Image (cartoon, rainbow, N blue to C red; front, side):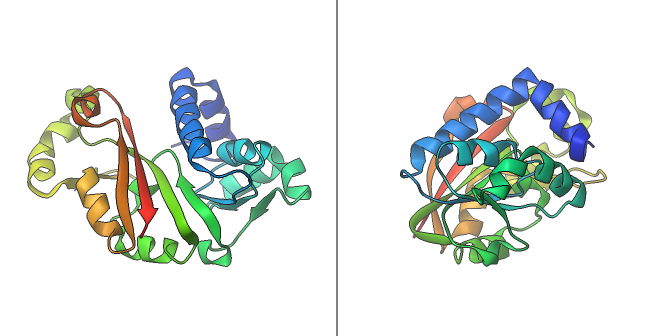
Length: 209
């Protein structure tokens, strides 16, 4: 597992991850009204936050990892000095038009009910949560024993966890949508249908009710 500077360099050097990140960033920017503020939840090293701020969006960043926060402070030094990016110790320390959670941040949670309840206190009226999550239906993972072993769990309950240091959880979109209600409703899933078979990440747009 990469942390801090290692994660930062890996993400910037990976063409596949850069392409996924750019698609996510563009989707967020297309959804945000001009000048709207955003909370980058699980901001990592600030790669997304820097883009949001550069496009005129005041950005709050919440990152629980000390190693990630240290790298973020260096990478976004100028933006933080100018208050275009502001670090918060808790999501509840800010209010924003949108919350973004990129690169499987929400896959680290075993249950999203309490999280969406908390985020409903952060997002302003008409706002949204945009999350990039690992896709449990991605057929590229079928070559791994853990994917085949969990296929029954996925079909039966729409979720499973992978035994590892980080214990990553994978969820069908319907499970996330159910956890988000009654605070948010699922508005968009990208990709959808058969497209889920060929994309490692899925983007979920959840609108505050």
